[in-house]
Length: 532
Image 1 (cartoon, rainbow, N blue to C red):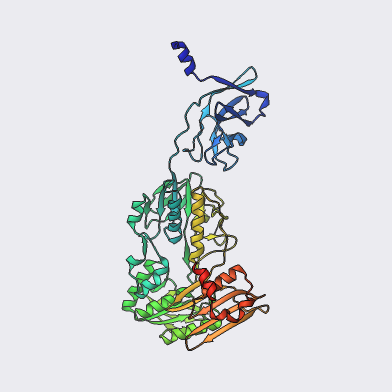
Image 2 (image 1 turned 180 degrees about the horizontal axis):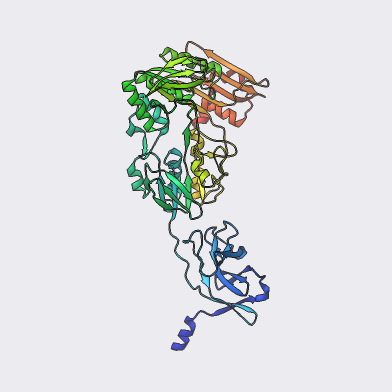
């Protein structure tokens, strides 16, 4: 072949696509040029051509997108995820690494012609950037799940408010009681992040989210850009709005710093008051008692753990704890915290005054949504998320105690794990399942006493209760039945059959044939089936 023929063969040829009048103005069509799909757009008096493949949605759809102008640049918006691609350069405005090829196009004698080869080859896709705000259990579970599904998909940066790596918050009670050491509850030491290439900014909470430019700024003025953002800001302990709550010696029971402060107080002070008779309050009371303090629990309701136990089980628990030396004042409402330089006591609404050197408020938590709200994300009681754990901003996800899903907020570990699993799948772009609010059981060991509850165990005229009491063994069981189905269960002292009762509640199984033996545990065949 002659040199001139070789040169001619090397030059990409022009291909006729269609007549100009066949393309509706301000729209596009898809053309097959060789083995490539090309999106051809007619915009005013010009024609543009870019690759039809949308890398964000992994589909040949750009020809169906809406044409417009963004900052003086002619773009097409993908019909799926709405990313904007420049018709001149192929650059994605939101995610520059998602670049599509562009082609030379011209109009000749009323026909649209394309040059057969792209002007620039499609840029190699690089790792996207994931910023995680929060370093708690839900956040790290989501990161772990993501690394399992897509270990190289993201460059991950984590911002945590606490000055250390991740730890198991559930084990703060054993830590306070002296049954655990700090190193035993740490789940993600600093080397864990280093080994996985994760950048950790501990003790440096994010203070600002710029959703327009997709970047965050921390308290130390560190700025990091993101392609995806995961909010896991957790919850904030509630402080009763009473006078004196700002005094030294008044604290909450939420993190490692709280435990350190309580242990320091226990070494030099004698009298402690716990406000709140829920699980956390009782665990704080038990731990401080083991540290040598004289502890009184003040509770607003008539019985302990009213969200997990019925009145009889709560009465058994109170009697057990009183036998161990704890004191209870209930029902009682806090009116004021007393003291000058430091807390000295608690005044109740009835005028009674209880002396105290330490007061721990354990009256509940609320979702930590201030950062999300200031960024303009939709919030109610929590950060509103859909079934994929995405917020109203499709680049931002949220998991854990900060979220609100279908009018529910969350405090138990089980739903948080489920949220982390679903969210990670969508971050890895392989999500198929949706998050659904499910019914969860509560199986706890309160100061050495086993308790279990599940379902709806409230009194109801349409329901009946099966009850077993064995004072000698310290056992109480109550099953609530409606239409021959187990609707709720409360167990105290013996929780071995809790999982079976929970299955019966979820399955809605007719238990007519099991009625006489329900209180005595699962039959052998059920136990064998469960073991399999």
